[in-house]
Image (tube, rainbow, N blue to C red):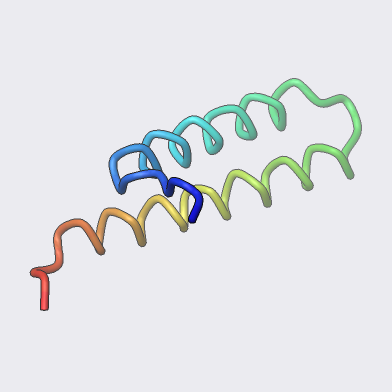
Length: 60
């Protein structure tokens, strides 16, 4: 079975992805490309939020 990243690694990855996509959206000259990067940033931020919620939830 392949090694799976731990929750802290996933949090860092999603935070980095959100920041990268947000920066790419700001740099883009084309509206379509800007929207695409903004959507990717939104998705990464959503996943980051869900990972944080999961980390804070008590283990059952």
